Length: 166
Image (cartoon, rainbow, N blue to C red; front, side, top):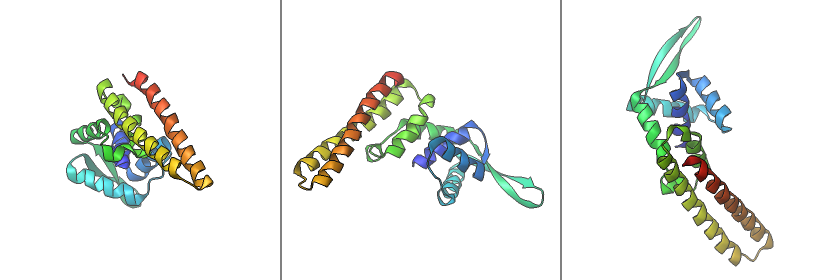
C-alpha cells in the first residue's frame, strides 16, 4: 500500500507518464519500484476513477500514456495518508510513505498517524525485550538487543516528530 501512497502523491504534483512516475517515486523515497507494481496500481487507480489515462502521440513510436490524478484520487490520497491501520503501522515503509505526505494533513491527522506508529513500535520493543530475555544464544541475544535499541531510537524520533506535527 505504501506504493499507492507514493504514486498518488507524485501524481498530485503533476501528470506523469509511467516511466517518469516510477523514477520520481524511486528518487523521492529511495525505494525501487518495479513495473510489476507500478502498472497494476495505475490500472486499479484508473478503474476506480482516481486517475485518468491519456495517450500522448510520439513520432515513430507507440503513444505513451500520461496519468493525471482526479478529485477522487486526491480524496483517496488524503484518506491513505491520514489512516495508518494497526496491521500496517509496524511496517516502516508504510509509515515513512505517510510521513512524506504530512504536509497534506491537518495537525490532528498527523498526530493520529504518529500515535499508530508509536503504538506499533512500543509493542515491537516489548516483544523484543521478552524474546531477548529468554534467548540463550549470545549472538541471537545481540541481534535482538540491537533491534530493540533501534526501536527505542525510533520512539525518541517519533517524540520529536510530534512537536513538529502538532
